[in-house]
Amino acid sequence: MSNRLERFRKEMAAFEGSADPARSVERGHYVPHPKKSLADTIAGRIAIRPSSTHLLIGGIGSGKTTELLIARDRINELEDTYAHYLDVSLEADISQMKPGVLLAMAAVAISELVSDQDHENMGEFIETIGQLAYGYNQRVFRYGEDDYDSDPMFKFVEHKGIIPIGPKVPKEIQKLLAAINSIKQALSKKYGTIVLLLDGLDRLYEDKLFLELIQDVKILSELGIGVVLIGPIQAAYSQYKNRFESSVNSFSYQPCFDVAKDLDARDFFANILAVRASKGFLDQSSVDRLILYSGGMLRDLMNLTQSAIEEAYLSGTDNLNEAHVEAAAQSFGRAKVFGISDESLDTLERVSKEGKFIPRTEEDIRLLVEGKILEYRYPELRHAVHPALSPLITKSKV
Image (cartoon, rainbow, N blue to C red; front, side, top):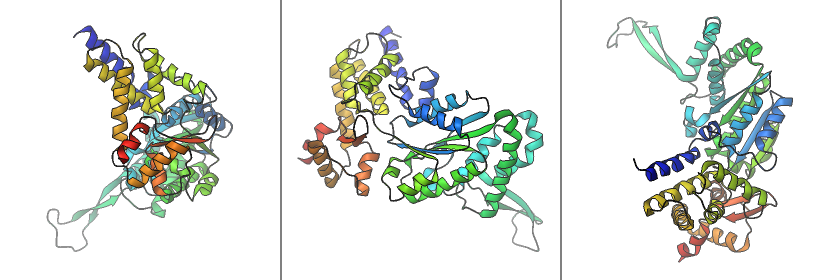
């Protein structure tokens, strides 16, 4: 393998954390925020009220997961509190979520904390949780039935679990809560208060369903379990916003970083690039353009940098330069402009010219959710069209 290929593979790997923030944290790529981070805020609130509930919302790719992982590490520094991270989207189909599913996931997560040594004492509760969460087949006697195809005496009855598709059944939920409470009490000496950090629901677009799921969070809190829940950005504009806020102890928002108007934010992004890229691989103009075209979205910064690295490798150069960033940004922008309606194009053009945006319709909110319009809250509240998309708006209308 050539030294050049090996070097470029190393550079690409350094930005792979865009797909898995946990790997970035493990590799030491985390860069502290220039101001007090949400991780510090969440950890502080949990420290003083371990069984409290917190809702964290923001755009996809704005850095919420990384903050949650750092908050987990900060909370676990406390002697009497244990934080457990769980990506809900990996456990269930988000589109099939129903009230009770988060309770079932929480039950499974807590049951997995039971050590082999203590498993025998809590085996009954662990089995109950497994059956209620994922379902089970029950062997029952055939009472005079003659339409059998194999065993003339017994048949199997399928009981659907709560997590896959099952409806909320009060009787099942009560059994689940009893099992959770029993295991939680048994684990209290070892772990103290258990705090669940639930990620992945920022892709749930049904406001009413999300409000129903938050009721699961309240129930867990009543059992003495703390919860931090990541939710969708549209919760900040939903008709249920007041109910979201009143259903949890704190409601936090992770906006985009205003790299155009906040020098600290710009330096923060520059440090992220410096930590990951090898010395001399990025020149200053490349750094400036990557930060500009990212729009202050951490995931976009990672994805753009990887695309630019690929452009540099294919061009035959040894380092990444501004031309590679421009090519990557054009490709990124074309992908974002695809599928935009004429109405949305009008909105984007207006925001681009006037800098004003008040999300009122579902289509407006979708522009925020998809990162086509970016929201900044520091140093001032403002909205802007994504920088990689902005040059293509007029061309698209033509």
